[in-house]
Length: 207
Length: 224
Image (cartoon, rainbow over all chains, first blue to last red; front, side, top):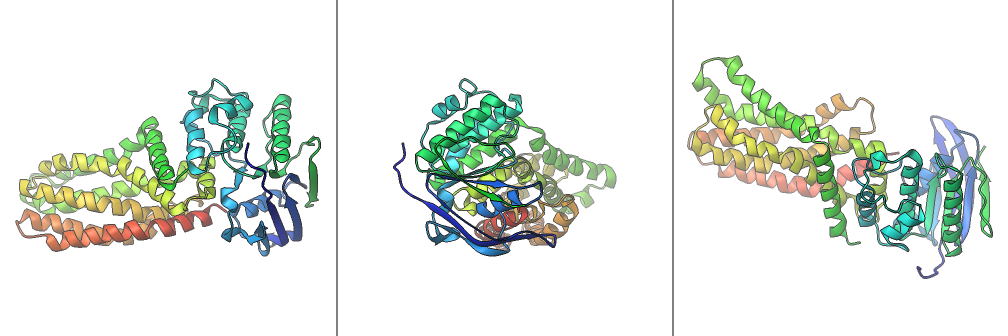
């Protein structure tokens, strides 16, 4: 287990304008260790844009983001975050193991070893299977396994439950609860109602 | 994990990927061989003319083969989201991108070096110029990959970036083409080529240091 240290993510006065349309403005939030931020809203209301701003892929049109009190780019933010987006970020010509090893090489080792993580997401024994032979749900679980093997305290998840069955959803909810219990934070968008027991969930509605 | 570990992991991953989709290696190489073999057929039985323009033919073909292969540098990573993960890594992006460029050169540039001497003999190039031809290809083709990477990084987000890519990149390829083909030409006539080789070395070193930074910045722009 990683040592319990506290982190915080804070956004102030964030706004995003896309094609002359204001998606959201003067948005503020504060997220501390153990909390979840759930972004809600209609399609096209800017949920994904906000997540991409958090990742640094987009600049906010105004506003600031702070990680532990420091501006994102001056802080240890990128060593502490992990992102699973619409795109899986896994190579279909590589095996399950090769994909996870690559993720590990790009980051630093985290709570679980690759084999423990695969067992956690019910993909044990799939090590040497090419990803193109996996089903959509299995691919999704593989990209979520990346969250377990790398060191991180903030998970940024864009619709993590897409193409997962009931069991898969329950599994991810368990992993999310565990992550928060050990002092982690999660920012996510979801169309599903999430059930996280004993976790402080903040909601922001963008529409 | 350490930066060097990440750097070599990127190179290894791209080499394994290239090995699993072999068409990517074969395409530029096949293009290079086809273009060069078509020239003698088009020009006819004029061995002296062919010998005189051989350095130009080989270098123009190498340049076009490199251009043809550029799109594959970031395309699949962009499409499946792997590029996002590379950009989010706490390691400096430019170093990881340099890893990708090196792997790309090993896959598309190095094979040209292997077949070039054979094709040069085919065009009637004198034997004493073959060494210099190989040297210019060894110094010049990595520059094509490095400069090309900036162009692809800028255009990978566009739907039809191919045309813009060639307009962006070709003018920057011209110095390499001039000095490299000139060196081979001089070597064929038995003249010293130290100056051209020194210039090619300096272009390569400059591209190695300067190209990965704007390529990484351009990728960050393309991805949003």
